[in-house]
Image (tube, rainbow, N blue to C red):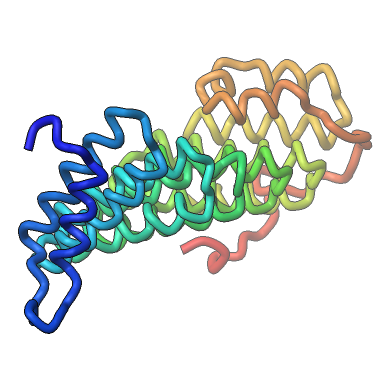
Length: 295
């Protein structure tokens, strides 16, 4: 079939899948081969719309042949072409469908990867949809006990939330990242996520929430004795004392410089609002802790 006209291949395949008075069952095996050949030919010719439709049909064919893995692969190809065509609703739908098909194979990692690919493609056009897909990608891995594989996804979610200026949501996911890091004994990443959440609250000019977050995190022994905890303590102390120079000095410290770039950029802009000296109210000065705040 090398060099065959993809239009004719599609026509042949469509004919094989339609029931008639003389054809009582569809020939999905041969039809799927024709769809696959046509999809490849269209893609090579850069006829993206026709290639996308052909890959959709090839995916359906593999489903009918009880081959969800191959169906997922074709659906991902259709999704990638939808990205090229900027058909954003289809990008989300196709990558979600690919994820479902991989999940049918019991493969959480490629299922999660498909959602993450879709999310990355949608970050600018549909950021809220991207966040949902990233979140679902995390859940697939976490439910399969693969917390060590979610870090890049949490990083991406945090970045999108910060772009949207949804700082509370960004901090919430950083705290979720810390929990995931703890489960796979990535203690340094856990402490970095805690410090990052505190910095995000400060950037949002919410000192009260930043201090509460710090006090809660200090109930975790790993964090309490870490460089990240000491850095957060210095930062909060500088805020209490309205010492802008100290805030800026700590924000440029090596501990902060080892955080993710999106957090470093926020830290370099501190303080973002008016800083007023206030009463001391923190864990290192003896405030009683609520032991139920973090589990």
